[in-house]
Length: 189
Figure 1: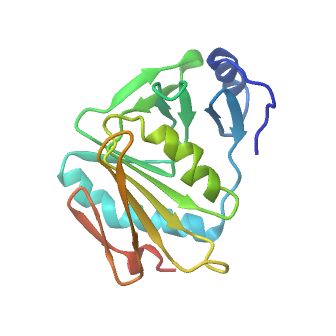
Figure 2: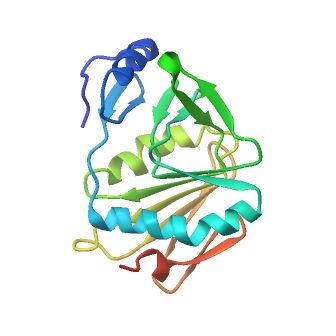
Figure 3: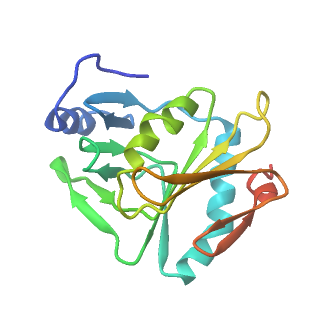
């Protein structure tokens, strides 16, 4: 849901963000309130954390959840909350106004799709994420299983303008930075 119909500056966004208890994203000069999630969404996130965290740590990588803001300066200074973002090596932080900070340059971004966010995650957000120079993969996972089949979409970026996409079914293995996760295990309730 877009909060502001008029385009606002980054400074206005930061002031609004500092004075609200809600998570709000900033993209293309617009503020978007982050909706609450479903139980299925939360279980998928929990499963991914459980399945990936130890393997990623052994490789010098850090898994960060959607409570941490991502700054993408090459995309009209966007500030977004991916469900999961993964960094390897030293994490680049950017101090923001009012004591908060955001992270930059993830290797992997994972979004859990819902009926409400699917078009936004596949469209505007992906267009922005493609501009992140460090990004290798953008992974989208369906969570609305009452209306859709389980599916994991993996977009491997070759450049800002070129990527490959594959859809993984329940019997597939999802590879994230040499860590393997069964799609079936992602959906385990």
